[in-house]
Image 1 (cartoon, rainbow, N blue to C red):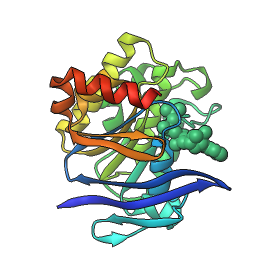
Image 2 (cartoon, rainbow, N blue to C red):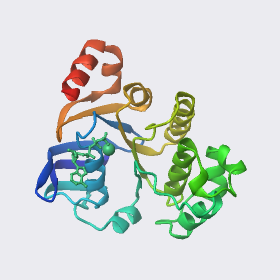
Image 3 (spheres, rainbow, N blue to C red):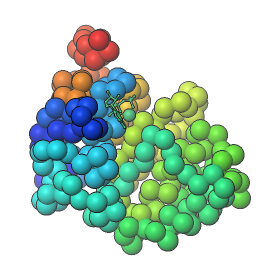
Image 4 (cartoon, rainbow, N blue to C red):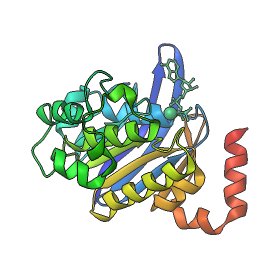
Amino acid sequence: MSLLEVHDIHAAYGSSRVLFGISLDVAEGECVCLLGRNGMGKTTTMRAIMGLTPPSSGRIVWKGKDIAGQAPHRVARAGIGFVPEDRRIFAELSVRENLDVAGRAAARPGRWTIDEVFKLFPKLVELSGRQGGYLSGGEQQMLTIGRTLMGNPELLLLDEPSEGLAPLVVENMLEQISRLKREGLTILLAEQGVDFSLALADRVYVLEKGTVRFSGPAARLREDTKLRDELLALSSA
Ligand SMILES: Nc1ncnc2c1ncn2[C@@H]1O[C@H](COP(=O)(O)OP(=O)(O)OP(=O)(O)O)[C@@H](O)[C@H]1O
Ligand SMILES: [Mg+2]
């Protein structure tokens, strides 16, 4: 059964329309990727799910219940955690304090503690006293994911986790997200990085100008380089 079903959503920023009927679904334990170039609607789709940019029409069904238009804190409490692409951590607070604040605000009780986050991202242990503003991009990304996990989400929305990171750091991030997946966490990922997404995803939706251009198993895109080139050439047009 699908945990999340998005049916034909439309969304706009003011008078500028950006989503034109996006439909997708995510089953429990799946890793699904929204793939697409700049400005195709990946972030807006995630913001619509979170209630940050409510859709003007369409349905967003979470565990059988329509949550379209609900306030973001209610969506979080219902079990959806969002890791935004701009990594909003508290620059003046230390790594530990950032996690602590997230723990206090935790949407739901569950397995995640600061120690569990440190187990997933051992690098953060040695940085636990450092202010958020003095972390590298990769370290900030780990902290942002850690903060969201502290809310014990059942579905993790990860917006471009590899963006702006050096290749070696991307490799690490890939391994850590794979670990979350192996543990059974359900993940919806937005990415421009084709290799990164195909390494993680079970299924892929290729977005183009606010619509779904292709959907199918990630394996199809891994095997069929011609199809991959066609889709990505199209989506960059
Ligand atoms: N706050 C905003 N106000 C107006 N237009 C916006 C706003 N945010 C995004 N847009 C526009 O909406 C469209 C979709 O943007 P969105 O951020 O969803 O794309 P994306 O696929 O996440 O791109 P990227 O890979 O660059 O993050 C783009 O044309 C973008 O310019
Ligand atoms: Mg984006």
